[in-house]
Length: 173
Image (cartoon, rainbow, N blue to C red):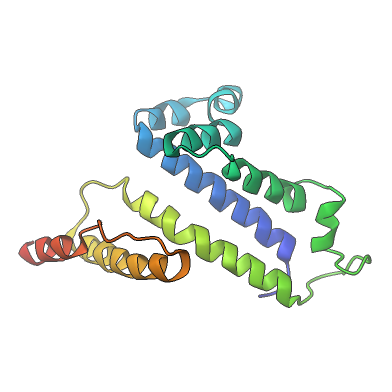
């Protein structure tokens, strides 16, 4: 909202990369310790974003490599100095000193967050196996809202997620 769109894209790229990494770890949680103990060179060789994205695309049967395309676009527009990235600091060809308001950029960035954060939150929650009952209730409420949201905005049916049994289980705790 403050008009620092390039900074927002950089942060969103970190959210994207972290979400992809968490999703990758849900495939094989034993890799978490390896990632944690890796030095920079090892981590780059095994866990760089392109490797993670390809592994997720292969798991999901995606051939278009859209994860990589989104990540590269964020790199180009915000994380690295490029000519296309100038648009986020100089929309009319002249650089702005400080923030500026642009409805198109603001709308795009909020939409991008709205598409990614709920699913990455779901992936993140999946990494916790023994949560206190208070957290389970929050998780069940979140899943309930996510089902409605994903159907409304993505036409994605998540009815196979049984939220009611989680809510009943929480009552027993």
